[in-house]
Length: 287
Picture 1: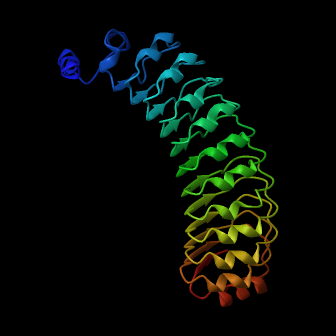
Picture 2: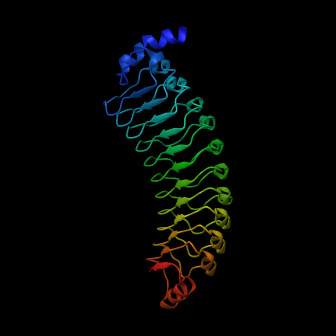
Picture 3: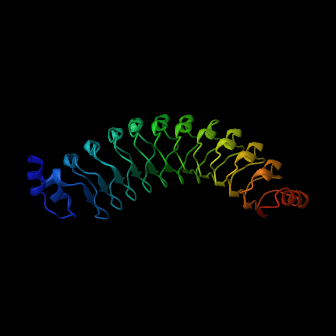
């Protein structure tokens, strides 16, 4: 009966201001503070222990109170389009968090405590200033969607090979010079965008990503592709423009689903073009 009494005391209203929410913290499950020119959050926000969805995007936040991580029921957190310089050191305490959006801030690192975010399924963190990710991200074994594009990443931690449920990975527009040797452990990966980096070669294990449908490698420094790409039996689109390729591996002829190959702005001779077209009669090549 006590639970019913509490429910009776909660107003039916679904939209609350921050002040109203803090007056009845046990009632609030969703709080939308988008675009309210907020520069600070009160530490008391940590009292909203029933909160499941929190939208703080499009404000002017530079820092977050450590008490924010007391929101241990939170599933969705939008922090994108602020001016964040850092994240709370105890971010990993939010163990039920499934979706974290932190894109378009000024972040340079993730705290090591992110190992605790083992329910995370969606990470959107594009347009920041990350130069690396901590090894602890390997604990995100539920992750399905990861966008770390438009950062300053120089390398990836080896632990990303543990993202066994990952389907979409966007790493374009960084400064990556190499990839983890065991990238092929991402067996469920369907789309991989590595365009506009500084890659000179690809790991042979990439051919083990046998659910891959779209592979985007444009704007790198690739001179050759591994023969193992011929094992990507579900590949439909391969984008390779703006590299230094002179030929394509003959093993690609095994890929019956491959319909589009874009290789503009490479170093193919007329003879090499003809050979590629002969080897891949089922695909449309764009030179």
